[in-house]
Amino acid sequence: MQRLSIIIPAHNEERRIGATLQDYTSFFDDLTKRGMLDYEIIVVLNACKDKTKDVVKKHQTARIKILEFIQAGKGFAVIEGFKDALARDNDIIGFVDADMATPPDEYLKLVQAIEGYDVTIADRYLPASVIIPRPTIARLFAKRLFNFLTRCLLFLPYHDTQCGAKVFRQDVLREIIPSLSMSQWAFDVELLYVARKQGYLVKPVATRWFDKEYSKINFWKAGPGMALGVIRLRIINSAFRGLMDIYHRFVSVTNVKTTPFRVWRS
Image 1 (tube, one colour):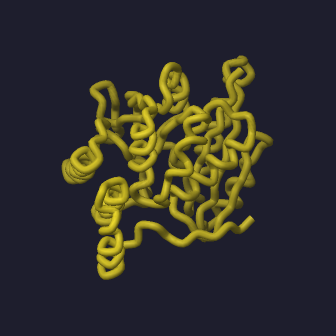
Image 2: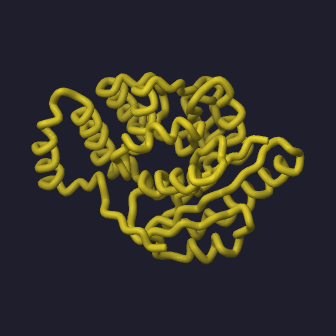
Image 3: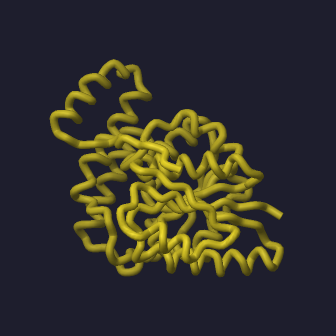
């Protein structure tokens, strides 16, 4: 029976993570009882200043593990979750956002679709996908613009690099983690870029995605940091690595933070 590890990065998610843990554990407990797979959930608390930890502990079972950090970007939290999952006998390792925008049955599709592939990603823009509610024109335009940037600079053939639901074979993660350098906005892009650069097969999977209330990411405010992250990734993987000094000076002047400081707490 295959063993699945699901990493859930959580930054101030006291209002949403309880329902997520409840639905995910109920769904995957049923699959385990039916002998379909075994699983664990790793909640990575990321600089939480609210009661997220208390909510997680309230829903904690033997299958839920908690990691806690004082300060870190989402990418750093996910990578630490990956490293923890790799320390045990997990065949498939992935991550999902804490807001349950991706329901557990949709996440299972990624797990099932990985047969014959190395990585599966939820793609909200495939013809068979459904976004509930439908995004505004402005938001859709912003996301398409970012996708256009990643395609032009990194030649990634994917419509949706940012959906917070991705699954990897464990041997793939062991190979690509040492090459990762980003801890925040462009983290998802780098994951896919490095995987593709090393020859791994990535399969986009149609999904139902629920655009949740209380979304923390304002794309228009986060956009400059995301764009700069993609530009940085392009520079460090080109013959122009020497331009990184200029890049860092520009980021310093514009006060856009792409790699926040992080500290292990417990």
